[in-house]
Length: 174
View 1 (cartoon, rainbow, N blue to C red):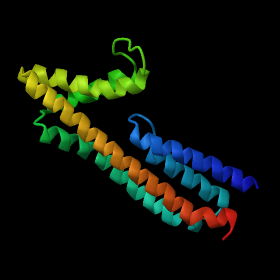
View 2: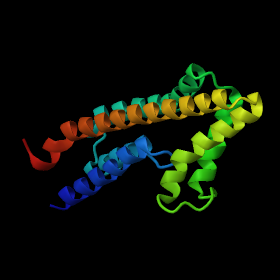
View 3: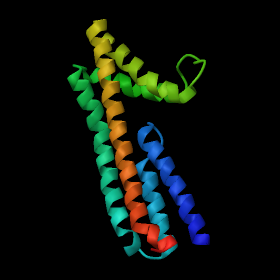
View 4: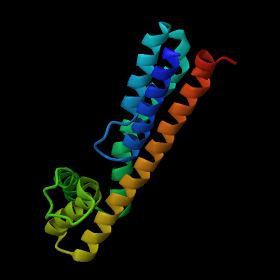
């Protein structure tokens, strides 16, 4: 019975990890990996978690690559310069810490969505002095990042499914 409670708690942690894979600045796949390692300690058997551990390790590495690649591809397709990419990063940080002008709703989450867009547009405009190019670059960076986050979320879901299929029988028999 106690093992089942720990199992459900770890699954809840993994669900938070799925959310973190999609929402910037929250732990994602690394949180899922930590929960799998904890389950290995609980069961006292690394063989019991070898498949989910390997899959999640690979997904963690892929997620890091997707983070960089998605924003880069979105920026390149939209014709953004490195200044736009730097502006998007600065905007993300500023938005996350709520340093944007006070927003009536949404708080840091809205700031994390608006910050990169505004940061990319402002930085790109300062670089090229063309609003049309700056807006296109800002939208391209944000769309690329959002697509990357969606892919990371799907990969995180796959990790949790592999974990459930690999371990369900250990906990509930069958």
